[in-house]
Image (cartoon, rainbow, N blue to C red; front, top):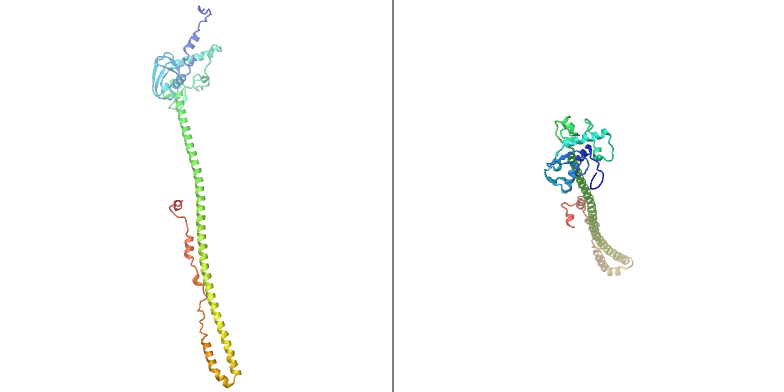
Length: 337
């Protein structure tokens, strides 16, 4: 009985005392393998120790100090951190023996602390059914147990703590995922840039189509204007030649009319006049006939006067030039912008 409280104190059994000695001062449960031992000889679950270390080292610096939660003794850690601490295989073996005895006795009292969920879920070794897989064989590249390392097929192999390899490969996989994500981001940026470039190309194509249309419209306007000027020259020469010929034809008609009148007059004089009267006017009439004959000296148009071939336009050179019309080199179109 406790004198101060008056309550009956039940003495601890040997198993309860052993269980208390096998409890982690951080999680207050039974040690979870792997168990590490500090230079001050206190033991900790490596997982609990790592969680405590990372909580006080948020930037994950390599190395540093770790303070024992039991005696406050400071331990200098190397670049491996908590994973560089030595494992206590003796404590691990005692824990396995204790759990085996508890299972064999069928102890199910509520006073006994339950196993941790991660202990129950950890796979066991195929060679040693009572041993959980807790180390990683670097030589064989496979997980295994401590017994395989001590007595089994991996005794001559290089091993490492399972959690260390787990963290290492997890970090490598995370780095690969981050690298893949960065590559995907780069690809997405490239695709977006290509889409933007396609839009720019389409806009530039529309701009050049508009410029080409304006250039050809200008050519059409120049050709139409020049065509009108040349047609006007043809019309002027046509009208000039027609007017000249009509004027000359009118002169010929007038000359013909005078010649006909004189001819009638001469015929009447020959037929109706007597000899004396005829002789009096014959000389005058003869002179008028000579002047009328001399007055017919009108010059007809020269041969080929009706030709308009000299107004033909030679378009072969222009056709050849237009046929070779192409885009200018050196981006002159962009310079005009």
